[in-house]
Length: 244
Image 1: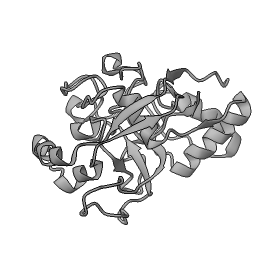
Image 2 (image 1 turned 180 degrees about the vertical axis):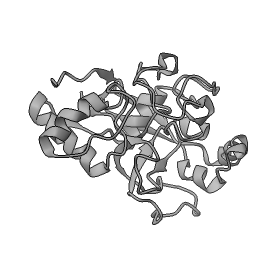
Image 3 (image 1 turned 60 degrees about the vertical axis):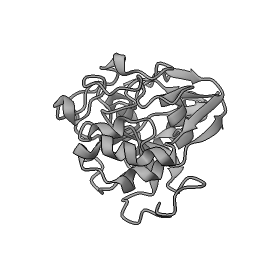
């Protein structure tokens, strides 16, 4: 199985309106009260800040089973079960995702890595304050989340109408995505935001939500983590990034 070039999407330098205004958090929590998500999970998004993000590149879709398999064969790692080779690989630890990036760097001759949390939100949200990658209103069918009822991953890029402003696909749903960023409260966060999430299985931020998650995780601002050691069960995957 060959190793093809990455389908990069160039993201221009710009400002991302990262996070959620502190005063809006109660309203957001109320809007998603039916999901059972407590307000404490949303307050981690506060405050909103204008963050300059240098130009970078991000993969149009997450890493697939077909792309993972040569690495797994070469390094003796497991190939997770999946409905097909064009589905996203899941159950990958943060450490193994980084090892894959280094392995691919050696083979393609470019410095490949995981995106930072700010880069991920920039690629998802673009230049405005949209709630979801496709706009301000949630619509079933634009992201493979629990409301679609699929019950498993879809082949990457299956829902192009849910693309971000830059044309990045699957930034909401299908798999929850590793970033390179360790969890910490945003500067100026409300006092109740925990300095450390001791209950997380891994301290790195994930973004986007998986097919097992509810629509709150489709939000561009939503910060998550791996809260279960069974990374396949919670749908953890990853996508690649590189400098411009």
